[in-house]
Length: 238
Image (cartoon, rainbow, N blue to C red):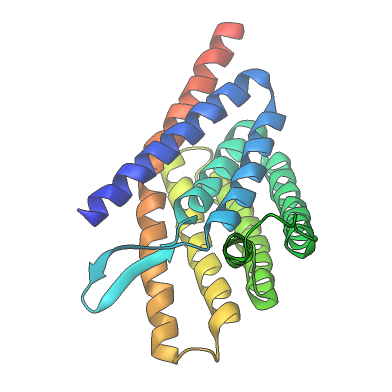
């Protein structure tokens, strides 16, 4: 039941993201980059909650609540790259990085700002606990984001050249699945190495990566929907 619920939310999220990408095709690539940036920030804000999806053997499939939202950003960069080209995908990644920095600074200001006197300590403690973060976690997140998202952009276009523009499903999955592995391994290693036993560290990496692979596999029909819609509209305009 838990895994079925996870798949349900994956499909809902990817569907919404695909609709926004189709709208972006009408109103401009800036919409797509803006949605990408918003999802990056949202993923970091909601990731303080850890979700449980199921088990594979003795390994718990757990991850941050933002795992679906964050994984969907790889779909967006692939759609942008397919329709608008690599340079626009790179702009999306850079924009998302600076948006993260601004979000971190804004959250730090909000946490440290003098609260209104009528707010209870319980509310303030909850606010700080949910939005607060350790510097090591932020550093791990930023490094993993830059490496994995940049790899995704270049890998997608590497496979596009190799396949001569054919087999969209191959470049979509080949770039995203490897990028998600990089993201998961880099983030968890930097964030938790030395704080938990190595076997626990490997279990965390494996469990979270499995969830991301499922999301990557499910996003294939959605990239076809977005790109085929764009080609259909382009043929009508011509």
